[in-house]
Image (cartoon, rainbow, N blue to C red; front, top):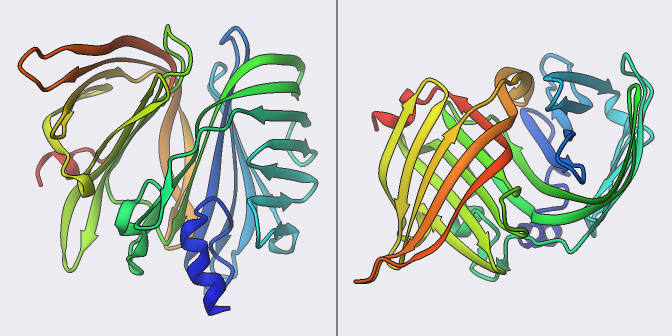
Length: 329
């Protein structure tokens, strides 16, 4: 069992909570956008373990980004099953894995069914001393929340029967990430889109207040995938926040490392209220939009200040929660 717990560090996609008995959550986030970007959905399967209040359960949270609607479907804890060797979880009659999802939700107000396949998965690299997007922080046993990127960008094909709509997808795009631990941070900003004018460009941004040995600091993990190269701006690789401004639903952010600078301007669209974990209990709330817009510019920090990429992203996901906790640290 001890060997299995250690081995999981280098497999952030698989279920991490096998030995957890209380105050624990784990959730995966699947974003799906159809061929013409007319329909944007997110499916969030997960588990909430709360022994004290006897409220433990599995769940699937569904977002319809274009209609700005959401549902939270509960399942018994016994309906949650998982593989120890690969990322594959089953909740009720629903299967979620790195390469496909098979959805059959009958408990919602309107049935949701679908079979979607994912191709050309692009995960954040896992290395011996940096097992995923957390870097060396993945080895720290007392973090309140861990984060993983299973795919920055991939192709989606299949059929989705979403309430009263049947959607055929042959050239859709997708994104997969996950979180696990005790609670979401006290304050955070999250931005994601892989729908730019140019294909196979993907942006993921996470800024959060991190408790650390009795103090707090603003940690950040930002990745830009462009022409099969991942440009990383993170707390653990010497990245620096040069500018952060938040004005209602507008975010202005500039980050840099030794070689590159990334400028981000984001406008949050209309969102929906999602459940979020607090000490394992899904009783928090956060507003998420899947119809936001993002502009980015990546430049080289040499004498020429050469622009490597500049573009606009749509169908963007954005969350802004207690941003003042990030601005005044």
